[in-house]
Amino acid sequence: MLTSEGRTKFKRTKIRMSAEEQTMEGFDILDYLYEHGAATVEEIEKHTGLSYGQVVHKIESFIPWGYIERLAE
Image (cartoon, rainbow, N blue to C red; front, side):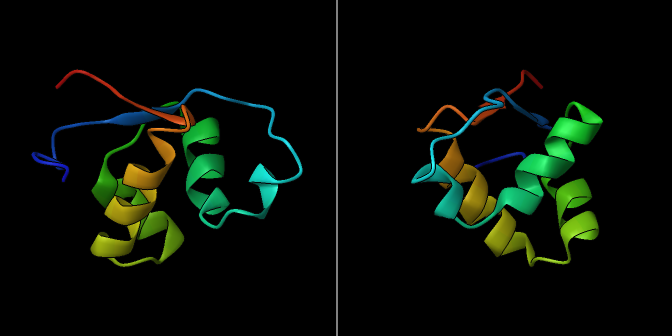
């Protein structure tokens, strides 16, 4: 579970994806991070229109794949 989401920023690390990976949901989050470099959960939530819980869930699912990196607070 993510803690201190309001202070922690995340950034997108991988640019290219396989066809299988492109079927995953949440690429609006990845696109936002690509365009802005880094963002907090709240910034992503406002931009995408997803709920706070949905954003946290997507971020947690992308971190193990290496698509999102948690930055130091």
